[in-house]
Length: 184
Ligand code: HEM
Ligand code: HEM
Image 1: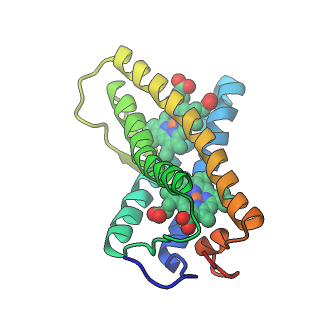
Image 2: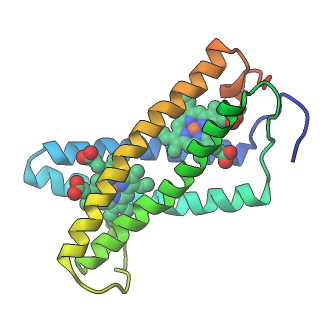
């Protein structure tokens, strides 16, 4: 769908973008903190990491459903081909990781036969996967690696958003915020 210049994302898309962005960054810091903290701290931090991770999974499914129902205003002008391809690739990879990372975590926990506790409110049951600690550990290793890749992609994504907004002055950042002038 293509419409006039200067269009921004819908309010729901913005809300979900920023909620998920904050949750992802908090989750990354929690996992890092757990890696470098004491045993007891690590257990508590990881419990929160898992609960937030499952929340991100649910929010991402809502976000994707919303996006499919409300196609985004594409911008065809101002962007060079490589910029468009790079941005698109990063965005698609984000969606894959926002689903893939928590799914991997959930399946890995399930391989240990463990449900995921959601902030002490309820338990998300283990998936019916075979019980194998080796598999669980391998999946957590993959999760760890992909999580690291996500962090680098976030740095690239933020650099791109800032470059467009303050260097190219094409108003990209305001497309994802309810104020400012999204000229792009
Ligand atoms: C979108 C959601 C999630 C994100 C962005 C995310 C991100 C990360 C990152 C970046 C790390 C590595 C941290 C480091 O460098 O030390 C990590 C580790 C870990 N995550 Fe997640 N995670 C998510 C969801 C989950 C879920 C749902 C679970 C489990 C149910 C989980 C369980 C773990 C565990 C156990 C580790 C430690 C793995 C290891 O180092 O061997 N994560 N996560
Ligand atoms: C931290 C985790 C973040 C994730 C996972 C994330 C993910 C995404 C995704 C998937 C899109 C594409 C939306 C769509 O078309 O459906 C997007 C767009 C956008 N993001 Fe983020 N984002 C994050 C953080 C940030 C931050 C910190 C900024 C600001 C500096 C930002 C600025 C933007 C902007 C301006 C757009 C719209 C780009 C355009 O108009 O093409 N994002 N983000």
